[in-house]
Length: 396
Ligand SMILES: [Zn+2]
Image 1: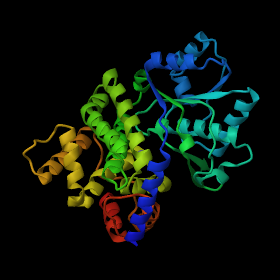
Image 2: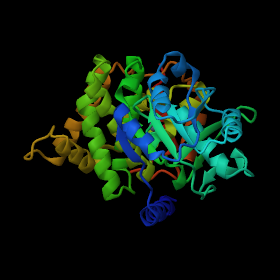
Image 3: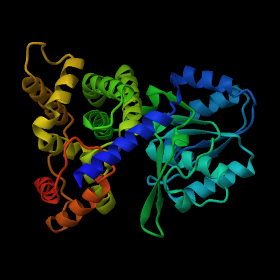
Image 4: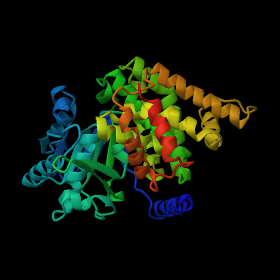
């Protein structure tokens, strides 16, 4: 079976290398947003997609004022739920059509960015429902311009090929994956992440770290994805503690946004691994926040891989300049593991999750294995029993 999985991973790697995932044009700061606005010279209307919390916090004010200054007509859609639904997308689409918009600006976390991506998709796929678009390569069309402005440093949705939309009636969610879902533009504005509470800064930051590590130690990384992953890890090691302890430090905030962007570029090409496969099951069953679930699982999974990932961990240590040339691969790997462990400690990440029930462990493991195999190019395969043991460790 594992031979079949590896063949599948090889084919996946060929597709990604052959077709090539696009990158958004990257801008930084409100100046960067103005530069993007200058490219919007057709002056057609834009749909601004966000959520009511961000709107009520006044986080959209400066962006909307800049749109006015540039005499661009805009319409606001702020009814995106924390887990965006099909209705959120369809209502946004109605406004987009009614106001004859020609592009979108999305300001928010992963949920807002995913909802905006799907409004863009539905605008070019009027006859296909979201359910019909789920899975791989069902869109295959150029989308209208989408300027993605993340307000958390973690998901990397501003540069990824996927969107996740919930169907509350069917009690399920759909992942839509296509290269055309990568937004045309991304703007990283550090002040927008300043009001994020520090426990969310920690969890979303470790989500980005997990994207970078899982893509780097996985089997289908390319030179490009590996370089982006290493850059993301170094930025996170050097900036996440400051962003967590001193939320108003805009340099650390900007570096975390950049790290999240690089990690997004890495994992959208080289995929993720067992941390995500298991974390998604905690999210689905208990509503555990994605970043927190990843944070709790990261060390147990890296420990499970053991010596098989020592060379990659040692390379991370060298790149981040936390190891010495004369040290052995094993010594370097252990330093990197210790660095991650200490980072999690400093970020006050718990070792267990109270919501996990011992009676659910078997089903959680089955679902995680189903998600991981064969899709995730993990560095070493895990059995159902091993997966159960890791989840059991996390119960209180
Ligand atoms: Zn993630």
